[in-house]
Image 1 (spheres, rainbow, N blue to C red):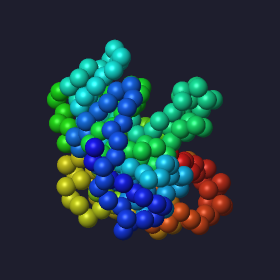
Image 2: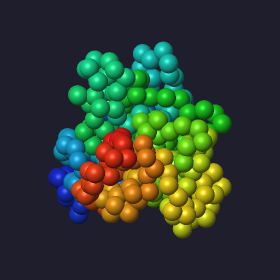
Image 3: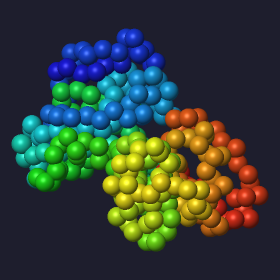
Image 4: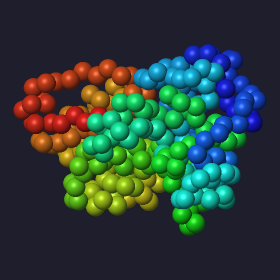
Amino acid sequence: MKAVLIKEKGDIAGTEIADVPKPAGEVVIKVAYAGLNPVDINTIRGKVNYTISPYPHIPGAEFVGIVENAGKSKRFRRGDRVMIYPRFYDGDCDRCRAGMEEICRNGGIIGVRANGGYAEFFAASENLIEKVPDSLDLKDAVSIPVGGLTSYHALKRAELKKEEKVLVVGASGNTGQYAVLLSALMGAKVYYVSRKGWLREMGGSEWKNEKVDVIVNSLGAETWDRYIGYLDSNGRIVTFGSMTGPEAKLNLAYIYTSEISIIGS
């Protein structure tokens, strides 16, 4: 089969579409669409915060497809339209048993710590596979595994409540759009930092320097200092990206006097 293949860490010039063996596993999926996210770009660059394995390596954390061979699965059959949960996990470590499989001690991101979906076929255990509803086009579903779930998990970690004010930084990106949309569906008052007026159609309002209860910041250090001061007392800032840098300054007096919570997601 054909696949995007990174030969060595950071070998952008040597990354190519190559012939590789077709994978075997519990359920074999013919990949239909794949997303492109910062984690994929940085995997190709060799600059992610995780160990990349194996090399040569197939990237691609976000993809959907059609079951070609369901094997012995009782949940799926040939022709099912499916999406892939982008993290593999063992289900047995203390984190998994506590319902935190996203930080499984023996797991990792598909496309980073295991070969991913930038290929014609992908094989997965059925616990990582979910059916795509008939009402949803695969081209739309492809953004859910990384863009959608990342934002949803961040909002749940921040314990966003109805009527609370949330500020989404970088709102026009994939995770940002989902954060605006999901926050509105959760009943929050949503503000966005972006020049894209169409975010209003997703339930957001342009931010006018209001104090907020929650900040969603997926961009990293460059935007940290600019916005954290707008958290109201007992506010929460949730972060899951470092595109503009991984190191930020912190005013500890502000954090403890205002009882601010910093949340990784």
